[in-house]
Image (tube, rainbow, N blue to C red; front, side, top):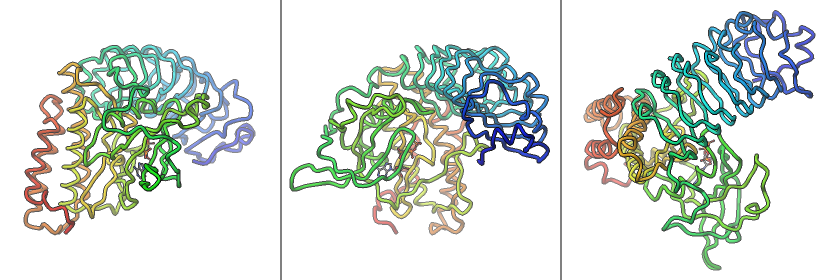
Length: 476
Ligand SMILES: Nc1ncnc2c1ncn2[C@@H]1O[C@H](COP(=O)(O)OP(=O)(O)OP(=O)(O)O)[C@@H](O)[C@H]1O
């Protein structure tokens, strides 16, 4: 999004030109008050981004002056209290106050049509009961606060699909959380209610190597996630033998899903499965282990993984502002029925494996799946929102956590059904396969969470659909 300049704004340069999006270039000196000229942008304005502007309050006329405002960003500003003025914005759907040192969200301050709320990295101790009136709330980002619990009224947020609660102070998950009919993506690592085994600083789990940084030769970057950088590297295991691997160095304090340290702990705890990226070991002796201490770039540890060939591509694209909690797909994306079934079987198996270890992935999205349709193989990645709840977790809650994730799997099945190519090679049996997957989708998307099948059952059903095809490892 192009940025607008404060001086041009003050000189009336944007008035009357029908600007729909306004993003202020961060000013040299923080703004003491809300620039009144923004209110003159009137009916046309739909998106307002004043992140990094230093603001701490909003004018009373905001809602009446900007009646069509849909999206408002005030991240990295100085709001210590959620501004009540936003409640008067009749069409406001998305609000962001990331990293504001915010302490309070007063009753009745949330906009009535709120769909996407971002309050990551603040100091909020409680949410208002009136959040229960936000019936359209779909995505709620609360990681990195001081929340001890959630208001019981939030059980009325029946459209909530994604909730980030990691790195808070929640002692016990409320049981109603695992009965929300649309909740599919939940993270709560880094809370007292998650397993204490989740600490990233513990010993290396059985079966994984302790790998010295000196034995790693970094080659080039493969990609960058919110929690760190992935590089291709050589792991010199002996003077005569080196293996090509991928390494991830975890950095930074907090992402919108949780902390890099919790992500690393979940990667290490996940164990081996053919549809998970294999972690080979944990890196020790990186020079930044002792030297880097600044919050933003703090070194949190590193892992060595199997190198995934570059022909594995992500299956979907992350949600857009409009799709909110659902992935997007390129117009021309297609997938054959047989590779699709094989990939779904792999992902269901990976999810069953994770829950058997007491881990929820929290972000089971197509955009976190690397897939090769030629090999009919899919790999579930990105443990940024994963939570180790542990094998001793309350049994009913644990079952509920798994069944929330089953809804995420249902979304995946639905999306993949939409990618099927007409006249696939299986012709005769394709319609049976389609019908089988549609039935499975319906059961996995049951609004009664407890009635959904668990991943083991889903896996069995998919393996049944695969039949003898599951034995064929050579692509046809
Ligand atoms: N083992 C691997 N081998 C090869 N490439 C990898 C491997 N792991 C990750 N990558 C590449 O690095 C990119 C970043 O991966 P990472 O898991 O850190 O972040 P992400 O899930 O894409 O992003 P975010 O954490 O911000 O959601 C991936 O998109 C992928 O292309």
